[in-house]
Image (tube, rainbow, N blue to C red):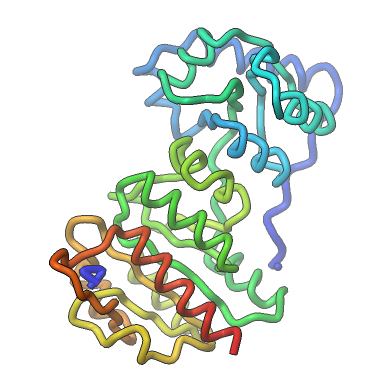
Length: 286
């Protein structure tokens, strides 16, 4: 338009006992000693999320968290966050704001941060099975090279609210499930199944084989308000600057657009995605 449950993956059983806590403490201490350049290298192995909403939702969703860093003097919901962490046997390290500022590289942390294991991605089949488990037609978002983590986080936040069964992103030229995505999504990234695939075209074929219709967002498409969005559907949202790639456009069953009446002829990717999702929700409620 210029933008034109197989069951949820099971959390591995926690290894009880002192050795588990010792390992976590060791990882936490190693993380604190790591400088910024080293952190970039190990981002595929560990990630830091921060902000009270993001950390709370990660805890509630049972995400794998190695250690929770808190400044108990921050007050408010920090005590509740610590209680949730204690219930799950997660190590809590009390630090001051200066340490949190350093860990979060100056970002607004609201007095807490959590060091997580690898980002938990799922398969496309996991997403499809989630729809089956709920007795619903698949409702999926495909992000074609959305590189801005703020946009990806905003899309995931809306997807969770709209009842989307999963989000698909490519491994290359795309934001990953990093701390910015978790914070921007207000914790929704802990709940929405996300598949990270090597080939989006192959992912689209898998969806088509499962009976899912693919709707690409493109300025040349038909108005979304004239389209039937019931049944199994997936929206493709193109990159911020260039829209969908040629191959993705060719693999779509339909192209849809949003009517534009102002002088500006494009919308932010996450805004366009949100409008598309809720038009589908509106039609499904009939």
